Length: 326
Image 1 (cartoon, rainbow, N blue to C red):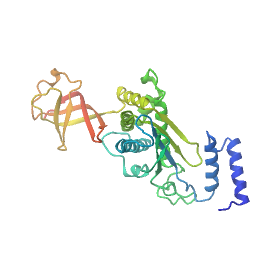
Image 2 (tube, rainbow, N blue to C red):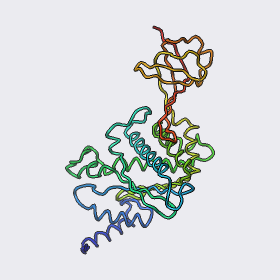
Image 3 (tube, rainbow, N blue to C red):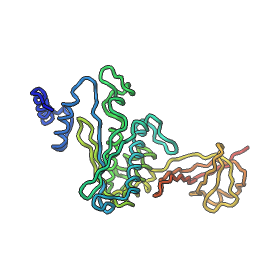
Image 4 (tube, rainbow, N blue to C red):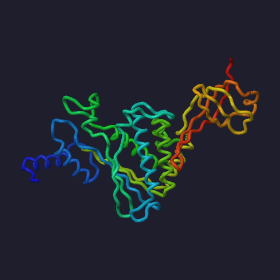
């Protein structure tokens, strides 16, 4: 393939502009500058954005031997990262609650494709959006894409993974007073679903002994990147739990089924589902007098966790109980 003099001139102009013009996309490394300049040349047409974003997750540390790692642990990392990206994307659309799936539109727009390759002492996982940018953001001018109402070239994954990288970066700087940290404040705004996804991914990294480097390259933008050690991931997970960022207040109404309560109750909800509720802050005096068949309203905290084996576990911890009159 040959390059015309006009193309060379345009590339040279893009490089010079990126070096001196405040209105051009930010760049932080020479690789960024080179990539952004070439992307500007390729994307210079009237159809709108056509170039896809791409990202890399590099796993290293004690959990990697040479360029190999356990398939089960790598799979858990990728499942956890997909869950985190979807949770952040849903939060950016205003949906932050536990106990339900993000809507189909968000799940489709945050779906990731994966390609793996070895690196020196590491495993590299390359990610790309499953939805092409031209379908999601539409054409310029006529806007004929699937989501033509969007007035941006950002795909949802661009903003979601960018925000996930930001919160991981804040997690590296929690410090000795977590409650006052930017990490806790930032994650609280993203809601309990995102906090739960971040906690589970961080626990996976800690258990597997993985240090992780995440980068995301959006066309014409500076690369976003963060590195998190297994030790830092453990502290991030502990901070999420200690700050109760992964809990959501819920109300449980149903029939009291427990004969003698030691540490938990069984409640059959009005939809027929039976749930176990830990007594939590409920004293024996508050529980005294409850009989099988009584209808009760319980104020509780819901928490959803993914176990090391991949099972999803939902727990409820009561902090107030009221007997309902017939």
